[in-house]
Structure formats: structure tokens, C-alpha cells
Image 1 (spheres, one colour):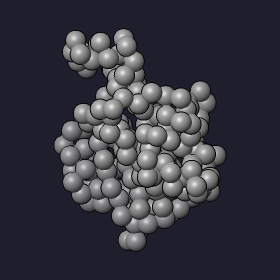
Image 2: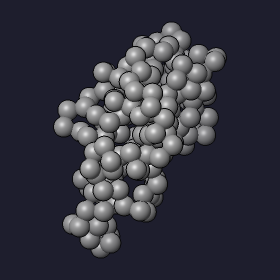
Image 3: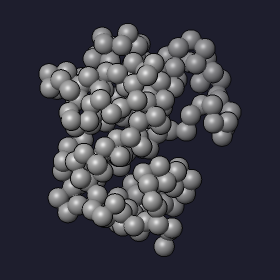
Length: 186
């Protein structure tokens, strides 16, 4: 059994540092959470997605939590927070996120980026595992990636998306815990 965790930050760190747990978490989130001492309410479905390749994911929290996101100097976080509070904008984000992000933030989203937005509700929780950041130093960038970073493009967009994911993933799960009661006994 993996050690019992005491906070959402510990869960996030465990997913990032333990490849076996991460794979179990992706395949069967409720069982993996139970293994570390988190019980998910029976009525809540948990979906885990991992950002890989050209896939970028964002989660819109419940409206009552819109002001809880860290949006400082982050146009994507500001947009997600606004979408949480505005049903029309939320519907647009869910239907066509690339267009809305470009229109509302001015960010250029490369054609090769696949952007998906999910809505966290009282009975559906999402956990996005962000890709390793380019600055992590885990690997050398390919010539194509270096070119893309230098000229903007996909990797520039990904850097912003990773910043949102890393800054707000823990917060979204804290919101799920406190505002909509995803977890029991935590």
C-alpha cells in the first residue's frame, strides 16, 4: 500500500513522482485514491487525463468557486475563472475552447494543439496531470521543439497551459473537496 496522504498537494506530488501510482490513478481513480486514504463520494465519478503530445486540458470549476483560482498574471486562469461564473462563456468554452481562448486572451493557439475543456460538477471531478514543463530539465528539447519555442507556436502555448495546470490543479481539487464535497472523511 502507498503511504496515506494528508492533502491535495501530497496527492499531486505522488502522481508526479510515482509512475506506478500514476498509471493506477489514470486506470482506476477511485481505487487509487482509496489506496492512499481518500474515499470519493459514491455519487462522484472521477476522470483522470494526462497531457501528452498535442493534448492540452483545462477544467472549469463550479460557479461558486470561480474566485478561488489563482489568476494573477495568467490570462488562461482569468478566462477559466470568468467561464466558471458566466454560463454563456462556459458553454462556449466547452464547445470551442480554441476559438474562445484566442478571442478572449489574444493567445495564438497553434493548429496542432488539441484543447479540451471539462466542467467539474458535484458528481463529476477531473484531475489533469500536466506534462512535464520544458524547464524541468528532464530531457533535451528536439530541434523542432526549440524552433517552436523560439517562434511561439505550440510549445509557447503549452508553457502557458502547464503554468495554469500546475498552479491550479491542486486548487481545483481543494475546491472539489471543500465546495462540492467530492471526498468523504477528508
